[in-house]
Amino acid sequence: MALQYSTAVRNAKLDAVETTIGASAVLKIRTGAPPANCATADSGTVLATCNLPADWMAAASGGTKAKSGTWEDSSADAAGTAAHFRLYSSDGTTCHAQGTVTATGGGGDMTVDNTSFAAGQAFTVTGFTLAAGNA
Image 1 (cartoon, rainbow, N blue to C red):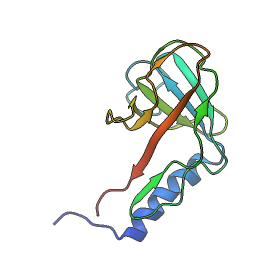
Image 2: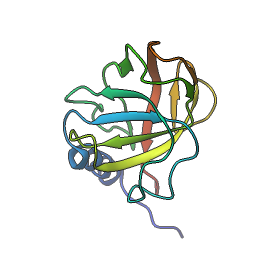
Image 3: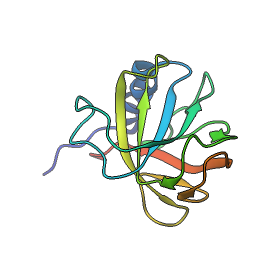
Image 4: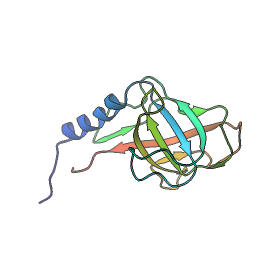
């Protein structure tokens, strides 16, 4: 039998992610494949930088935790194709999470309204949900 956690434990693990990263996290959308892990130096061109709301994730429920509020950048930093993201503490330099980016419906860890960025264009994150395993 595989290890299983109660919903309360899975929710607590997810809420700890937001607590550890902290209020007003910074999201950077980048080109190329994500680095090997969060301790590895940043890679790819920064296409957009979003200062997330102070409470940027909803309370965990049922073993999942979804983005809260609007995650957007009114003016992209550079042109290119979005492929990965990194989530940083409010200092914008301490990486705590990373994953793939696709257009809505594309199956990435995070989805955005358009993966082809032009410098100065607006963009919006359309989906980001964390799930705790071992149900």
